[in-house]
Image (cartoon, rainbow, N blue to C red; front, side, top):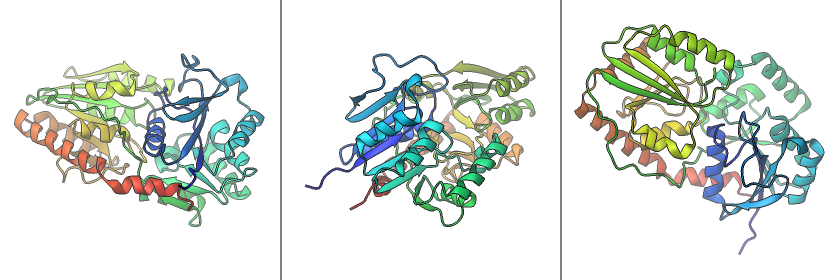
Length: 385
């Protein structure tokens, strides 16, 4: 029996946190699928994203077993280069898997520390941070970071994990064609909650839209509101926003736009919810409306389709040709009229047509969830034998 390899994984926020969204889900699903084949050691914070309250019932600054893996939850006062180095050296990992690129304590410092370890492979997961839309936010600082990183060879001898070919091309656009990139789509949850009912009744000229995403420029919340405020729709539209307010200044511009909406369009901010609540809440709506500037995967998109919820999204995600599959719309942000037309089509849709679309969405999602090639590609990230 061959020895299980040790994988040291660093990430700013991890379970039981949920406010950081996709990266937490991506890592949790990866670990859950492969924890019987590899020994995972996870280093993270003891607070959730945008929070100062430590997790309840978790002792910080020591290793503890959680769901079959070892997790070290750093308290804020203990976070430092030296303490990170001591903890990483204690593990003596075969593989170091680093999430993201801009975090001082969980991306940059672990990358520097990994050079003094005897790890046989260092992997950096881009997590969509190389996408053009993501690079635009605080663009000056990010361009400077990439310039310095290339100059000092920060990513020399590093393998990047891209979740699709588009993300791989984004990484190589920034760091050059010689950047080593391994492509493996993110894994879906093994603990999928099956919803048996048909969800929200659909009447013609009524449409309930929802978004589960951070309120931020990357998620393009303001753009979605512009589509609703700048067009005339013949019917009643409700649009509920769930997610952490990531940028209060940006949210203020969204609130100003909400005041300009016509009387037949109602937008409500619902705050943050835990991931476990999402599948049930989805049953109250007719479509996910998320004109994001870029997703390297988009867990909420797959969750929506699994729940039979069609999606209206941008073409800046891996989920493409959705209209052909009768499960939604992936549209160019440069053509907001296309979003207006998609919303109109969903608004005018009858119950019978909507139920057919729901069925197609569920079948489409199951085809993705049952793809064994995705698991094999993720396993290959850590295959050193």
